[in-house]
Length: 86
Image (cartoon, rainbow, N blue to C red; front, top):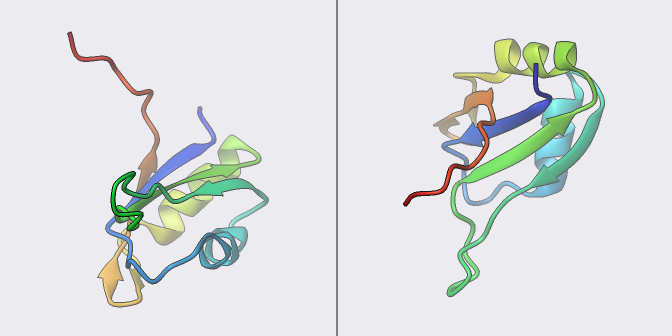
């Protein structure tokens, strides 16, 4: 099982530090990335969080998927590799 998670439906106010605090309740957080729009610099409303182990990733999914954070319900799933469109 992968340890990288996709987190959708984020509040635009959340920071990487906020995400790390939230996910660290479920284990060791390796990295947090919140992509921004390359033209405007505005956050895009989702993030990638990498946990240390698959068990910690699963714990984060079970504990945080659907949880209300800053007025929005998080969608937490395993991250899928990006596929190229031809």
